[in-house]
Amino acid sequence: MNVKKSNLFFGFLSWCMVLLSSPAAYADTAAAVAACKGVDWRYFVAGGVCAATSHGITTPIDVVKTRMQAEPEIYNKGISDATLSILKTDGPTALLGGLAPTVVGYGIEGAMKFGVYEMTKPLMQRILPTDNTATAFIAASVLAGAVASVFLCPMESARIRIVTDVEYKDKSLISTLLQLIKNDGGVMGLFSGIYAMLSKQVPYTMAKQVSFDIVAGLLYAFLAESGKSVDDLKWAVSVLAAFIASLFACISSQPGDMILTETYKSSSKQNFRGVVNSIYQNKGGVSGFFTGTGARIIHVSTIITSQLVIYDIVKQLLGLPATGKH
Image (cartoon, rainbow, N blue to C red; front, side, top):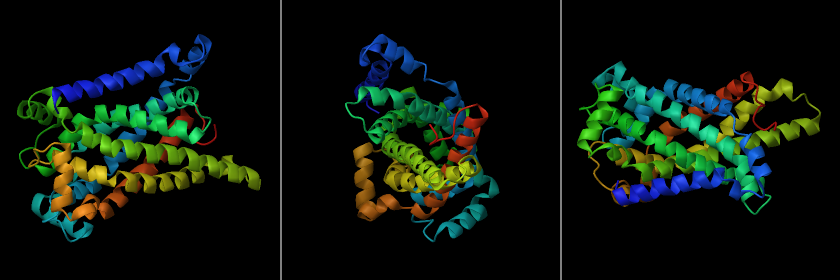
């Protein structure tokens, strides 16, 4: 990534965080202190646990999806055929390619995404000149997705390279990162795909977090009006709201996921605009951005449904209310 652009991006991100944590952003100091008390480490823990677990257990699906996106000319006969081809060519261990960067990267990413989202929801409701709760939730999710992207970028770079480049397939996470730093011009080379990462993670976070919050809240309201026991059905609410959120997140972030894979695969040396143009021109126009959608729907719906349910479980074990009940 260009140094000037990277400095601009990280400077803007830092400015946003300073703005959100500054008492000047509120009506008075007392309001700022009250808002800061809403920052709870338990959201970060719950987010890290659920993201690391859900992404880790679905690594084989992600490997197949990534191979289909990176080499559509080889893996072009569906998910089952691609899986069998990988098993025959590279062996069963190939389906666990990138497990370490997946667990570590998404553990950190999940902690930041869920934690920052929950932390900034009340702040956005104070800052934004509107009483629309959905607008505040969307703004908080955009910021959370951007922060999480910065932490995830190096790990996703390593994961995709391990899965798609034979030179890296037997390397550990640390050796892969060191090799990428050496080959890509230093540490900042690990962030060369930040714009591709943002194009995936911001829509993904926005659709997932906001729809889960809103759908869960609507379901709880419906149950309350129906006179049914909310506590007896809270897990059903979590699962249904999580599944609906997974569909929104998958569709909204699929083009960004394709851009991300194309950016990081071994043969790609193009900038963000070049990658977008390449996909459009060489992979069938707009439909090219939806390559591997079938595998990703299975992958993402499994990840998000399990992730959000685990998130709710861990939150409640730590003494926090279920999503949609507060």
